[in-house]
Amino acid sequence: MSLEAFLHNLHFDIDKTKPPDLVVDWEDGPLAYKLYRGLPVIPLSPEVPLTLDGGEALLRPDLRHLGHFLWYIFGLTQLSQSVPASNSMVQNIGLLQSYRRFVPSGGALYPNELYVYLKLEDLPEGVYHYDAAHHRLVLLRKGNFDSYLARALGNRCDVSACFCTVFVSTLFWKNFFKYNNFSYRLQGLDAGALIGQLLEVAKRLGFASGVYFQFLDRAVNNLLGISEREESVYAVIPLSAEPAIQWFAGRNEGERGCSATELCSELRAVQHDHYVRSRRVKESPMLIKMNEASLLESLRSIREIGKEKIVHCEDEAVALPQMKRLTYDLASISRKRFSPDGDFVMGKISQEQLASLLQEATASFRYRNDLDGAHENPVSRVSLYGCLYNVDGIPDGAYHYDSAAHTLRRVRHGDHRLKLQQGMPSDNVNLSQVPLCFHVAGDKGHLVTSLGYRGYRIQQMEAGMLVQRLLLAASAIGIGGHPLLGFDARLCDEIYKMTSQGITSLIQIPVGPYRHCPRLIGGLHG
Image (cartoon, rainbow, N blue to C red; front, top):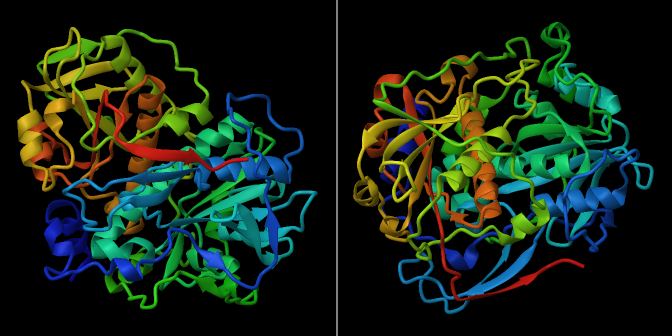
């Protein structure tokens, strides 16, 4: 199968991404976290703060604050016990017990992993894996790698001024075992949700951050000691207590920089023993092929990409009320965040609620990254559309949210809930009980023209980042959202008249009031 056909099927012909006779071997499923064996470990404090209101920048970040940071991003935060719904893919297993985190994940499988390169006074300099299962660090390489990492980023970051660099990777098997090739789409979205949470936690702790999507993949993977046939880094995020540092300078130096092969030759390759639980780990040829097509051997072609405003043919614009930015305790909102299934209940949404939700989701989405470079407040590569019903003072219809004007631009009149429901292959969410059904939209070509096949995973990550901001904002105003990939993208594109604009629906998020489902939950913190 060609890569073009593969990407097409991921969005418009999902059935072709899985063998028709696929049977999921639940008994041989992997763990939702990677466990290294036989390496030095450093425990992190379980006494995490119960509030994250934000504050002054830390003068000297330490191991204790780093532990809080990692736990609120990707730690095991809750133990949940519930009875699976009758339409669940997991049949006849009785009570369903799972460990939850503050970010959503398709099937709660969490295919991503976190690694950190640390330079703190209270532990050896080096590269570590965050062991989420035990809330500890595992030492993978000891030493100072400032020069190596700076060159892997194209000499565009002052790594010496950063106390920590976070690497977000994807371990293919962790959700390939269930979703087969469709997992490729999920992995980018999951990584984006994780990055969205990471950036929000960093703000609360006073850490400055920048997201690098373009880097020498093999050099970075070599630093971590991971194999590209089973795992690969998707994003590199340095953190600094010095917000004034330059994040994306030195592109010319990057163009003259070394290749991934040259850089890898400077560092001894390492392999570490790790445990995944599965007795039979199958290779994922298309995921490996896509990953190989996305790798950068050099940074001579590194790019900042411009964006254009999307022009819409709307017959009405609805100006939303101007609202103050939401202020909330991120810790509390993260604990409250819930993805309702059949738990949505219809309720009227006020204009103020909708305005706060959309304003907060898009305003908090702005972040430093190497695609925008030094540009301020650029137009986003992904945007929000929504089918609205029972919103006070706003006619039912399909709308595009113009974040710059804080305005809803109506694309179609009417109630579209039944049509959207017919486009869902599963009935796990009753859209007749949902007042707001949002869709994140982006370039139909998935940025492949400007960024090659790497553009696809970047687009999915940015969509996931916006989804996480939307979910946090929804939680802050007392409602819930449930990200869904089980929807008909063609149908949604037709509703919003997207086809002629060269964009498409990337993910669907029903949002609204909900009742609490019957489950037992317990917090996992000191």
